[in-house]
Amino acid sequence: MANITIIRIANGRKVIDTQIDPSNIPTTDQAASFPTGASGADQLVKASAVGGYVTYGNLDTNGDVGTTASTVAAGNDSRFPTSDEKAGLGAAPNALSAANPVADKTYVDNLVDGIEWYPSVDDEVNYVKTTAGAPTGTATSGEKCLNTNEAKLYTYTTSWDAGVAVSSGERLVFKEDGDDTSGGSGTYTADMKIYDYNGSTFDETTPTLGGTFNLDTDGLDYRYTGSVWAAKSSTVSHNNTSGLQGGTTGEYYHITANQEAGLDAATAITASNPPQTLADRDKLPQRISFAYFGGFAVSQTDVEFYDVEGVVQRVQPKAAGSIVGHTVQLESDRTAGTLTLEPTIDGTKVTPSDLDVTIDGTTPNDAHLEAAPDTSGLTFTASNKLGIKATSDASWAPTTATVRSDLHLVYNT
Image 1 (spheres, one colour):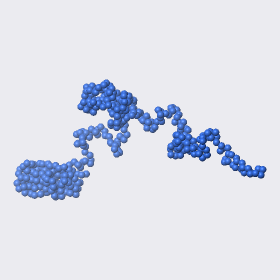
Image 2: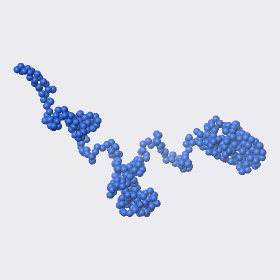
Image 3: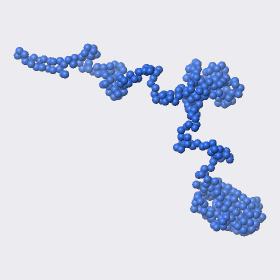
Image 4: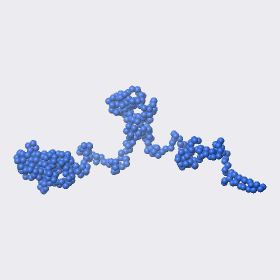
């Protein structure tokens, strides 16, 4: 209740009585909390300005909490644990501390997976030498030797270099024996240890099953299997991987042993000898054949051959493409004169002369010429018609031999 002022008349005089609300009287502790040497409004200002005098319930929402007398207390009450939450954090089995922190989800997931993360490792070595002096012997180019006696790292190219000092904090792993033909490099069976240089000596970590680190030089994670450090992707059985049959972007299909053997059967598959796919089928040369039956006469100019069935002189291809070859064969060898055969597109002889076949004293019977796919002047569309024109001189013989001409085509689809 508030203080009440009562005015009354007593003995003919006005008397003012004030009834004080007891709840307005500060307690001893409250009075002691007021700063000394101040009064009135100044006391209230100081009380509101000192963080220690403000309860958590009155904090604002900017997330800050004052820790000294000169800092204004502020914060978000919802961010503070409840008494039950606080009790839970500090409960059994072990009280929280800097050395015993709360485990986050990643830590728990790794623990379930049997992974114990070690700090990242800078590089790997192939030899560890514990006595003074540079390594000796012949190693493989690029191999490295850690000398723990001198805190130096040696690298072999055609010989061992002078070595470089190991930096304080540098971490190295001996996960694989090198190839030392003389055994003089100080090599011994790989102990799989991680060597951490503290500036004066090496702290050695003997791995336990599931121990894992990231190697800076290749960016891969290595997990200790109990005998070797294996890249994490290789610790899972191939047949147990998910998406075994692939099927989405970036995935690959697996094939059976019989399918692989079939692919690699006749000749080994290489980049220069790839397997043919259905889309490649039309890229293989296909031919259309023309012929002049009963013998080609002398002194003829640009005479068009018929197809081998003797029906049409020009054949329409099934799709667009290019002429890549021309083969000519005679029933009997040429005995005199010259016969020239030239491919045509819609009756016009093709511009390049490299597919013009000449039968003469040098080439008396069969001949074959080739051109690269899509050679300018040798390309055609699906609506074009292809043919052969032949020219003979006055001394051409034999005039009784049938002449056959084949055009070899590749299609664009």
